[in-house]
Image (cartoon, helix red, strand yellow):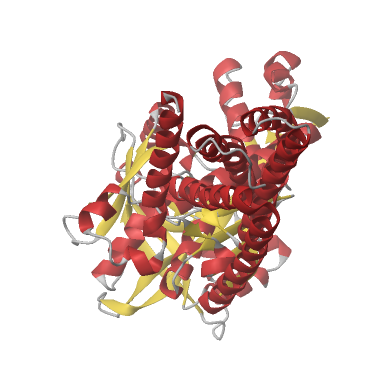
Length: 594
């Protein structure tokens, strides 16, 4: 027997030992008995899917209309800046109407003509002019339907990537995140009851950071404050602050225990008192104060009257970290803007010294500091404030920083379906899957031993190595084993046995032609190879299709199937050949047991 056989046998033995080493930590009864150095060297394990270990299944709807309206606001801002810079038009006002219409209102009606084809040329694929009123000095533009469809598509794709980044930072093993139209399906296996609400909060948090200018000097809030009914749960408050160049600024605002009370009040206003389309009312949760100004543990909501268009959004964020407020000792989030965002922030702050800038997080006012001076550098602080457990506040700050680092969702998510798979159901699925695997494998092993005798034993040994190798590869990549994956493993056993049957029958045919065992083995393997290869390739194509287009369970089945095809091809063609060569070369048998 030549050196080639020893080399092949050594390769099979080495691969098998490594495979066993990777599989052992994935067996709970053995993992607890392994020494520390072993666990440190081999720290990868087979993960169990949602259907086997329990977890949470979520379906989110992407509210793409918000992404479209935000894009319209940015286009309106761009047009204002372009008219002011290129055409020297002062006082033009861009107002979004509905979802995808932009109304440009000129201070001087005659300046409508300055919005010509040349200025609109860069927007020819984005905006279409619908109406131009030279007397009123207005131009109505509408976003192109194909452009809107592109924004819709981007919102969904970006939402998937953002969710994936957030889930990965949370450390959930093998999450499933797939798209179904405008819906996103998220499956998170192995979550404890304590972590589920936190993960849902992290996934669904829009984390849209916006900067809008307050308009405290406008008389609207003073007029509305005088119309608050005494029994509405809403009260009028008046504050003041130093507007620097503007002097003392009077701030009229409304306060209530709940946002619903504020919403009901504004909804009850007659049309002539409704909020102007250029402005909006935003809310902030603040600490309730006593008559002496002392903060109380209870919270309430207050209003801010702000300009509708955002001066800057979270798209400019490059990094976010958790810091500590030196005065209050509470955690805060420090945000760093990119160069373009820093330039815009510096320009806006320089133009609005003495005014308040509202910092919005998920359409709620986080804080509204007075701009004291031009702010360069592009660094912004987001304070959490309030009372409560410092550990919980730190966790909230860490979650917010992680969410901002992974990017703001381009559109809000709406949770439309949720279901929890308990670990008891998962354990039942494992038990049933193991029973099916054992029953199917046992029948195959007995059949091969009875029908092919010694050759059947070779096939069974290759079958055992096949299973061990598959599990080792899955453990090495920390792949998730699902119930369909177990089905794929059972199917792989059948495919591996089928390959060995083809080889054994080919060898039998050669023996019937009175060839020696050595010649029969060589010819049988040579003629069986391409038939085995063709059948495996055909199955692999179906597996690739399932992997590409299938959902979570189908993908688990496809992964196990594809790994099984590779292992089956190697064990049936290479490993069993090593066993046959041992018999026909070293033992030099004159009659094969087949």
